[in-house]
Image (tube, rainbow, N blue to C red):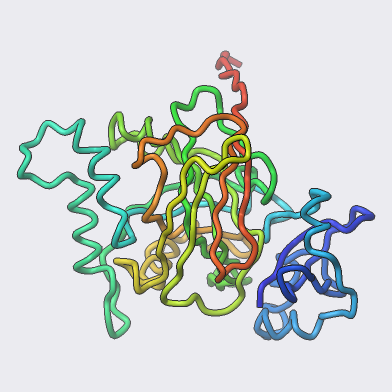
Length: 331
């Protein structure tokens, strides 16, 4: 099952199940996926089972929702500060080369020595897929923001004027909610664009934290259930309607150096990530990005990321926003 969040023509929040590429069936008695998840927790019912019982006979035109700008992110929280966006890097078998090249040019170490990037990647390949319930090696981890950094599909994704780059990162994101005892429960998965500033990161690897503090988008559809082990997709950039860059990507555990469980275990091992009622959106890493091919996105370019596993494509134009840096004054 795949779900979307949207606004009705009267402006009410709503949840819909995707019937096909053209049709949505609205769920009754529920306005948000967060509300649906809370009800599933309270009733002890799986989210998919509960959603199936709430299907109505009201079918809507999917394209009309898109054309009228009524698509919403597939998960949000009534209080944005209680939604955390984070992620892991160097988790895909094809992810290391570009990152290593970015960091090697600023390295003073000998050519034959591995960069920290390649060391981290090698650790994941050797220990990211533990067996028999063991805990594997921990991945690279980063914080991206709270609910205010999430941009709905089809809406412009802002990049601050002080940024040196605004490059797409096509990734799968896991969506989670913590129950009343603080136990994380997976709601589902979505395709996402974990926009990052790769030029800033390239200056020095210790700038990675800065480079990730950008907006992101994911959806429009939330895949409820297990994630396929092999996922194929395509990432592209359009400029003035024309494709200026396009590349296929692979994801899913068959194409990763870590299991999803291992990534989840290392994120939720921290108590402050297990606060009851909080929502987490966790990006699992990428293997493809246009920056590695020398592409510099410009304002007005449109990012497009798609995979048949996740239904409709995720599209967001880029908007460079003037950001006045506030001056700190004594109180």
